Image (cartoon, rainbow over all chains, first blue to last red; front, top):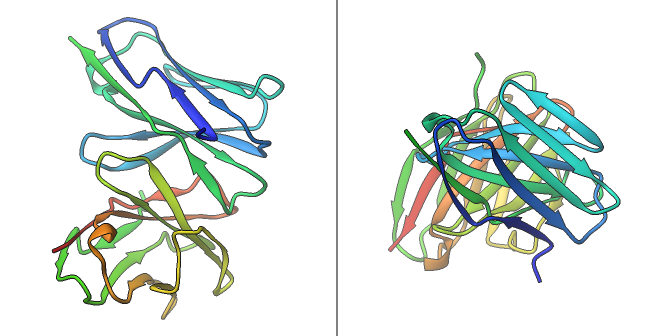
Length: 109
Length: 112
């Protein structure tokens, strides 16, 4: 069983829709990260969370430590949001991180 | 805006050859990382480097791999005797106090 799982694996949305991507993990963590991988392969860090909720523009990330679950929400989705969104967890320290399989999002105009 | 750079963008090599992948982290960063992503698979942690030594490495990072910071700016990943399964995108990243890191654009390694 993978230590970090994401759902859905693939997601297609109409422009303007509210999108939720889920991440669940089975290990104790010190922090959780959401990353965005562009179609060209480049990776950008979006959020680092250890509790609660963070917001940046149209992106919102939440984490529930007790339930070992995090969600990434995108409000008013746009075609430029099309990318793979990756959840990654730090087990004990920032040194060794485990990546989820990614959720491929396609936003259609 | 400062960025992590990697060279080359694509490296093609024959099985058994040595390759060196180069990275220039952001200048005031202290923590350096290498990751790889085999085509169609998830990103995997390889190694982290701080204060001129390896601070953590994964099971993937075996004796055929080594990292070096030969001068004040470059951070290199050497693969001594490449295998077909080493074909992947290799990402370098750097950060000031740890995560979240800034990622480089990646080097695509193709082993024939």
